[in-house]
Image (cartoon, rainbow, N blue to C red; front, top):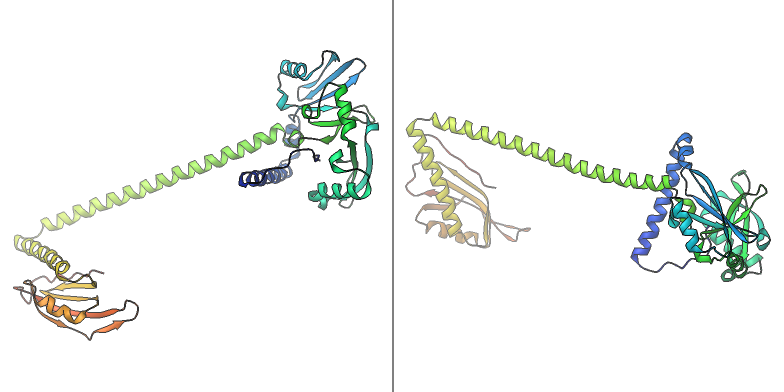
Length: 372
C-alpha cells in the first residue's frame, strides 16, 4: 500500500486524464489476471520486477538481487558503499536502477505495529481508512510518519487480516543514513520475517510492485493489437469502397454501351427527332431560368407534346402568367388551378400550363420529363 510521502498531483486536465488512465489500466490488468489460466500466471510470475534488498552486516552492506535468473549477492564495505556504487553493480548484473525495486532492510523494532481486519469490499478506501485510524487511535501525525498495511493471513468471509506498519520519519531516515542512503534513493522499506527473508512493508513508489514486466508487455501488446485492428479495418473499408466503385463504373460503362447500341439501331428520322427533342428541353430550361424571378422556385416541370406544365412557389404567382407570355418561346400561359398560400413556405403555390411557340400539338414519340 503506498505511503503518503509522494507530492500531491497538480491540478489540470492532463493530470486528471493521467489518473483516469492509470486507474483504467489497473482495472484492466486485474481483470486480465483473473482471466489468464493459472499455468500462464505461473510462467509470467517468473519475470516479475527484480527486487534488491540492502542490509547492514557489521562494517559492510549486503546487496541481494532477486530476479528471474536467480539470486545474486555481494558485500560492499560500508566505507565504499554509495548510490553510484550500487548502480554500477546493477549495470554489471545486466539491469538498470529504474528496473529494480530497492528495499533496505531495517529493524522491526523501529516500527509501531497494529493489527486490524478489513473487508475486501473496503480495499478501495483503505488509504483513507488508515489515515482516519491513525488520527483517531494513535498519537502520530500524518506528516511525521510513513505507514502502510499488508495482509498477514487468509481471507475469511470476505475479511482480510492485516498488519498496519507505522514508522516515524526521523527514525527511518536515521536508519537509511547508516547505509549511506536517503528516502529518495529507495523504493520501499523492508523487514525480515521469521524465516530471515526480507519482506517489503512500506512502499514509496506503487509502480515498483504492481507493474511487472509481463503486465507492461501485455498492455503494449493490447495497444499494438488495437492499432492493428483499426488499420486493418481501414484497409478493409477502403478495399470494399474501391470494389463498389469499380462495380458501379463497370455497370455505367455497360449502360452507356447499351444506350449507344440502341441509339445506333434507330432509323435517321427517329434519331433526328430525339436530337430535336433533347435540344428543345434544354432550351426550355434555359429560358425558364432566365425569365423566372428569384422569389420563384419550381417543384415540378413537365414537358410533353409541346406543352409545358410548371408547379412551384412564388411571392407573385399571378404575375408569372404575364412574364411567361412575354417570352418569345412560350405562349398561351394559363393557371391550371387556383393560387393558394402555403403556410410553411409563406408563398403562393401555383400550377401554370403554356405552349411552346411553333411546336406541334402531337408528335410521333411523346417525351415527358419531371424535375423535382
